[in-house]
Amino acid sequence: MLEITDLHARAAGKPILKGIDLVVRPGEVHAIMGPNGSGKSTLANALAGRPDVEVTAGDMRLVGTSLIGLAPEERAHLGLFLAFQYPVEIPGVSNMEFLKAAVDSHNKALERDELSAASFVALVREAASRLHLAPEFLRRGVNAGFSGGEKKRNEILQMLLLEPRLAVLDETDSGLDIDALRTVASGVNAFASEANAVLLITHYQRLLDHITPDFVHVLLDGRIARTGDKSLAHALEADGYARLAESGT
Amino acid sequence: MTAAELFHARVLEDGRQLRNRPLYAPWLDRGPSLAALEDVPLPEPRSYTWEYSNPNPWYERNASGSDHDGSTEGIAASRGVEVSDFDAAESRERDVIDANLNATIDRRRYPLAFVNDVLLHRGVVIEVPAGASGAEIELGPLGGDFERVLLVVGDGAEATLLERPASPAHRIVECLVGADASLRHTRLQSATDSLEYHLVSSRVSAGARYRFAQYAQGSTMRRNDIHIEAAGDGADIEIHGAWHLSGRQHLDTQINVHHSAGGGTSRQTVRGVVDDRAKAVFNGRIHIAPGAQRTDAALSAKHMLLAPAAQAYAKPELEIYANDVKCAHGATMGEIDSDALFYLRSRGIGEAIARDLLVAGFLEEALGDLHPGEARALLNVQARERLA
Ligand SMILES: Nc1ncnc2c1ncn2[C@@H]1O[C@H](COP(=O)(O)OP(=O)(O)OP(=O)(O)O)[C@@H](O)[C@H]1O
Ligand SMILES: [Mg+2]
Image (cartoon, rainbow over all chains, first blue to last red; front, top):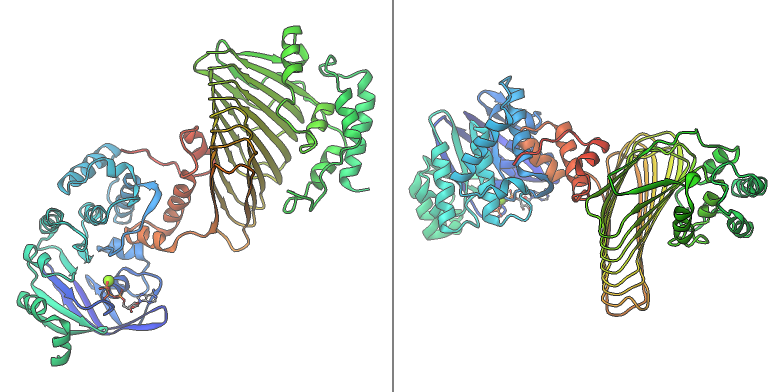
């Protein structure tokens, strides 16, 4: 599904990713943990094609196609989805028309039939209610004035509608209350299948109690310092990153 | 002689000749305006409020004379609304015109109003009776180069005025909004290659509500002066401005909200998008007179530049002479937000559509509920499906 090899990247001219290797196969859930500033979001942004992240070496392939040089929208059409750590507010564009533009663009790029307005609205309403987002949130501007938790649920709503092959969730659990965490986790679990894969960036063990990862990676200073299974997350919770850094890889 | 002086001389000469045999609405006495114009100079390039717009081409275009094309169409009004052409006005309407024409206009400040008086090609007076509800008026092109619209909304009446695109050289729309009345006034201006200079002057009485929207594309030179007075206690004013300029279009908007009575509110929301080599000029002034205590005034003006050669000049101006007031203002200038653009593109939305969405969303903030559908169509905002 995803193959990252020796990826180096800079953000605003500063080297952040210093040789990442990662393979994600269909049906897998991977968690990436790591201290603040270690490069987790930069990795997610490099995948999604954020203009201010510059890949200087290495490769990223999604279903066999290199992402290097592709526009963000082309990566999305290939099946990549990034749930932003900080979703952007766009006050004058209604959430509903944004979702429609996103779904229409996918259908057009993939040469699928356009959805009628009525069936689209029904689809969105259904997904929104699964995430306990009231219809009011569809009329409001994109993320405009949404609470932190509402923004995160709105990201998952987009994921459910776009049905990506690879979903990268950048701290989608941060700022969620216990009920919202459950809602989001059950959304992700319902989405995850043998045909797709999930990359979860998180600081907290508690998300991994709801979504069981196949692998846990620890990112330190732009490199994957350790890979393990779910128990690695427990060890980190107990000992913190400092011990891991001392013990080396 | 400057272009302004040449034009001024031409207007005086025409005015003196016409004085004895005016072709249009001969009963109107142009004498006082003509006399006043003798010693009022017309605005020169680079003078106050003309820092970024050059009036000379407008003077030159109109110095050669111009006239009415004879049409008398251009107005539609719902039942109960009285519409009379100045030329056909009977004595009752003449009294209304005499009593109200220029009542809201400080013509030394807007000297083109004197010119309009002298050269007038077509004028209409529109009366909405006191207490009327749901009155609707639509104005199209009136057929002249110098046009005048006088709208009198009676006490407690409720009316909507929609100005469809028209591009005379000079149109003055004067609105008198009676006590506790409500007027919604939308002006649409489409792209033209004409030279235009317009004035909206409205007076809002006690307890009345006036909502005005200016939705525009540019022309070769289009200047809109907008003067709105909160003249009675508790007058409520809302102004929406949205423009989208491209090519070499030029649009200059000068809004002056004048609070002369207390307890009034005014809200100005302006969003301008400027592309290519176009130029937008905006001045939003709030004047709060000494007696206008408990006034609550706000102005938000934002411009978005889409191309390196696009220009915008925006300035808020506050003149506050009362102490118990609230006044908030902000003017910003920016480009398309790169984070928002990346966000949309990461959802598979191509760059061109993403930009259109962001431009539309930006302009949307200024539309309010004043003819938003017409505004979107005019502003070249992608036909947007309203889903909910
Ligand atoms: N656009 C940018 N300009 C300047 N510095 C940047 C930029 N993007 C990232 N950085 C820097 O790169 C480093 C890694 O940032 P990144 O956001 O990837 O960290 P993170 O692991 O996601 O941290 P957190 O857990 O706090 O979200 C930080 O030092 C950050 O300041
Ligand atoms: Mg981060």
